[in-house]
Image 1 (cartoon, one colour):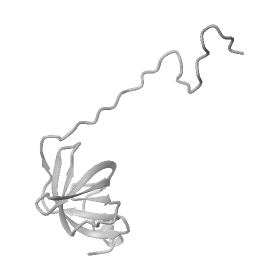
Image 2 (cartoon, helix red, strand yellow):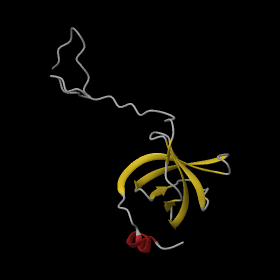
Image 3 (cartoon, rainbow, N blue to C red):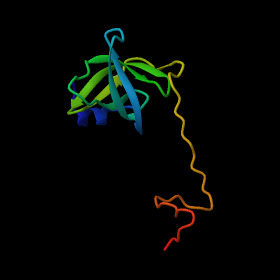
Image 4 (spheres, helix red, strand yellow):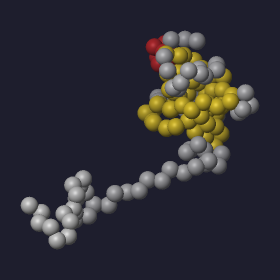
Amino acid sequence: MSSPEQTEKERSAARRRVLKAGVIAYNDRHVTLPCGVRDMSQSGARLFVTGSISAPDTFELLIELDGMEVPCEVVWRRGMELGVRFVSQPQIVAKKRDQIVDLWVASKTRPSLRRKPLAGRDAT
């Protein structure tokens, strides 16, 4: 494995910053570890793993929100972070789940944490 500094200079594709949940799967997907994806390019990604179990040198990276599955090889490790190179092109499959975000629509009244006065009482 090479150092992160060498890898960054040798990198052929620029990485874009992301913050996504991922799954490291190995042993024919019988063993999985949750991970976070910090940045990604067409050829690799930077992941962070929490917990006492470390990721193996080769595994599949699954990003359920994007429906992406890609075999990976670890290039470098630094604490809880690891840099991986995609061994082949990412495969797009059916999404396992969707992300739903409700938009906050501005109204005439601003949201507040203050309690509304009880009916029949003075607000003094």
